[in-house]
Image 1 (cartoon, rainbow, N blue to C red):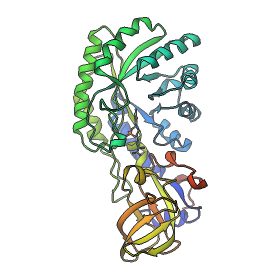
Image 2: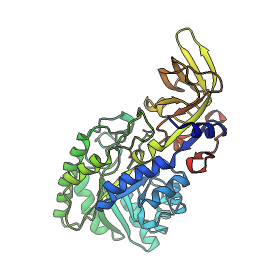
Image 3: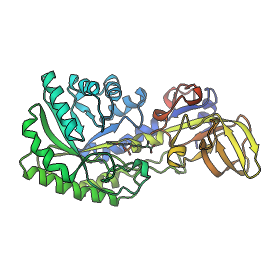
Image 4: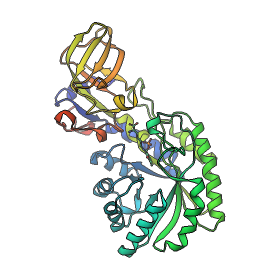
Length: 386
Ligand code: LLP
């Protein structure tokens, strides 16, 4: 729960809006620095989780690079101060225009996912007259044990190059004269809460690393992606994920050769806990079977509950009444526009302020204008009148 001075400052802004506690972000980044960057690991922040310039600047200052999946994200990373040699460009469907933007800035690396993409990148790099550095995204066929929409490392998923195609891809490289193969890349899924999938990933990555190196390629980048899950029901504001255990697992299990370094692409675990969606109760309604708290935020601001059945913690900021059970719903004309079903929270009335927590990742970035909804500006803790 936020302290009282913060709650009264939050009253001043037009709801719904995203509130970012930059101290939580800084504390999170301290842990990333301590357990990864200080050990020589490279951590790229996945802009798909949050692309607010204010957030990106804090992340950049902590020494992370940028992991981008579109031309827009590459441009945003550059505009936010990331140097091109800290930018990786991933994604299963990069357009020619997007590839050209990356080439123009001579970014650190393209993570490539198919033979056709390699051909196109080779051709465009030739036209630009510079060599493009490439990491191959390999599909390790590891079960991430998370929601099916955010599982990415199985053979049935569209991502990456399957092991059975690897030889064909590697055999092409001598002809791809404008590409330099510098690494391998994996990403098995998102919001992974168990550690065993990551252990499995390490053994697959070790085997593939040795296999490719034995064929005479020199890989300097071993990129194990992101996916580290967060606790969406934390009882306090500062629930930083257990980075010591996460990075420690890779430190113990990934076998690097002397010329190799370990890379990560983290999104949610970096930005998730610092953001909340602040919303006001518009109406309360005693339905036949349910009590509804109808708030002014909807699936247009935070689609995760509707899309992945995600349960974000709800804190009522302005009521200390006894608990009551509600469905907390938004104003959008869809029944899936529900933040929580049957949740026990202090009794609310019209005008009460509510924080939907852990919304710093995949919140604001997935906002839509459905129902012609207006987007209110975000609020940052550093700017609060407290
Ligand atoms: N690298 C690649 C190649 C990815 O596809 C992703 C996320 C990441 C890194 C960052 O993963 P993270 O550390 O954030 O788990 N909208 C969904 C999540 C989609 C994740 C897509 N890929 C959600 O709200 O749960």
